[in-house]
Length: 236
Image (cartoon, rainbow, N blue to C red; front, side):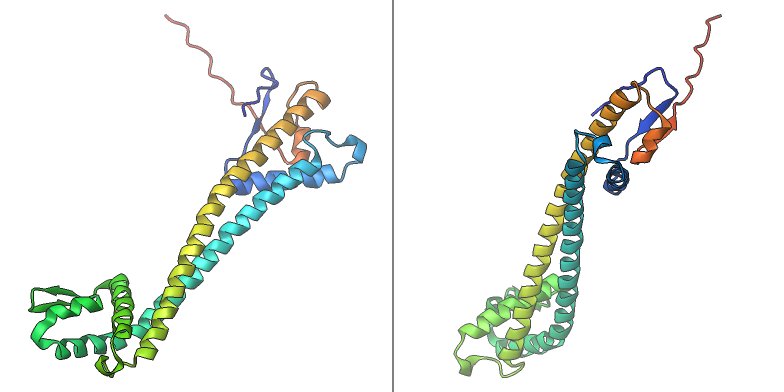
């Protein structure tokens, strides 16, 4: 919203761009308006409307923070689970190669990458080991108990796989919540900013005879001096 008031005056309003600055301005507005007698408050946009918009923006900010906290907490659990799982999977990988020496290609069923029938690629990175863990549990669980590896115990590996799966889901849920919150925060802050601009327009028009004055700072508005324009050069 572009508001052009007092184009001949020496003062102008500066509008915040960051959501935190918009909220700070709105909080100052609400605080000052709340202290005025009811009959002196703006009729539109009213104190209640601006307070509601401020509350909606604050709720979106909290959603972003909550989503990030959930994501970070789940990510920590994910890394901790992988640290517990890694040494066990090293044992499983070694025993699988021993058990299938004559036909290493069979290890593809456990989620391993095999070249021909000669070389088994060790998983790399947390994603690679996580994929191996989930595939390993799925394959071992499908086998008769007599055909499963004795070590590491399947129940132990399965419990870690379930913990890993839950942490992955929670991490994605937190990420989704944070991303939605960021969008909601931007929309709510933009709406709040427009309301503050509308309120400023009403104040300037109805109380200050169309002039931008320092008194507007009482409502939290930022009032600054206009930059003096350089005089035009006279052609020689």
